[in-house]
Length: 198
Picture (cartoon, rainbow, N blue to C red):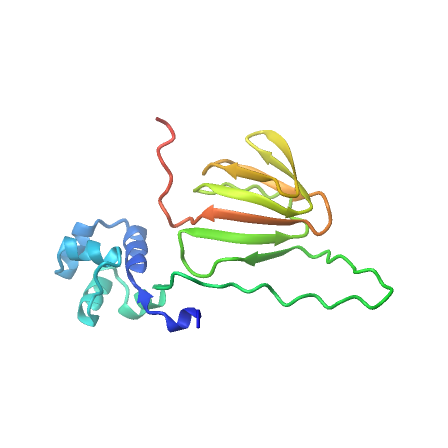
């Protein structure tokens, strides 16, 4: 129960991603497939389920196969539980627990969704600069980090958050062992970016 494999697939997002990757309009796909623009729009928005024959026509128009589109489809579930990793073994009596020096990244969301979330534990490559297309929120669950964004330095402690607008260059590093940072961002495949020049 709750397993994505048990859920029906929503092929609309896969069709839309493929069409946009090829920089095609709905009108071009409609012309190539022989299907109507309104129907294709309903398919992309998961308001209509294409028959096998229609899906094959769409796939041909997108220079792929129905099998590939189905493989890239999103599960039609509204609830998905991502379990925590198996807990570390308890330290021997009388011995202090040893910090894990290896940094870890764990995805908190499976599949293609509008939001992406990751948990970073331990140190992070402070020299690596990030610039994401869409907005993101960083939350320090444990420990502390130093952030650099838009040429300014920030210190964030446990419970602090930082909101970064899409396109802002930033980098960060943990300043305390066993720091845990949660990053939630609008997924890269979502066109949430507005024209910021206005």
